[in-house]
Image (tube, rainbow, N blue to C red; front, side, top):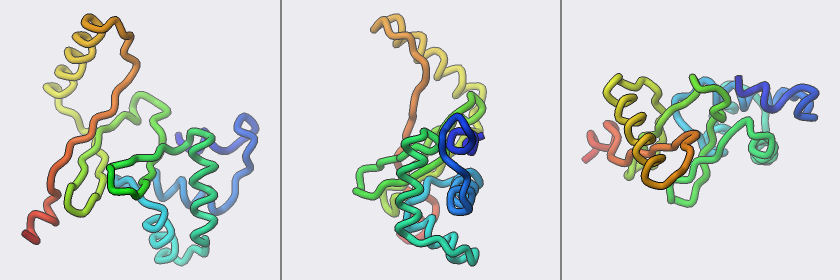
Length: 148
């Protein structure tokens, strides 16, 4: 679990309420969230965590590799829990209109087969030992399509 990457004697970081709240929020979201979105959601849940604390905590969590930063090219960083186990692996759907980043991990057998074949082909062509990949699909989300 992502919490293990931040807390405990191995990381050297102590568990604080802000860290637990932020990692809990990121773990339960199917979206990658901005610092402002994290702050707003915590505030709406009546959790008093200042925006500066959110930014400091995100930096600390990135340094400890508990979370990852996602950049979709709009100048705003988004965050999500790190892939610490194979079952954490996911891909991203990015809306080019509202810049929402949705994670998904419900892969079909056809998609899994395509990824395996692609990795195998790349290993053969370039001599790399593929250890992972990140995939971002871009398009327009259903909410933005409805507005058009």
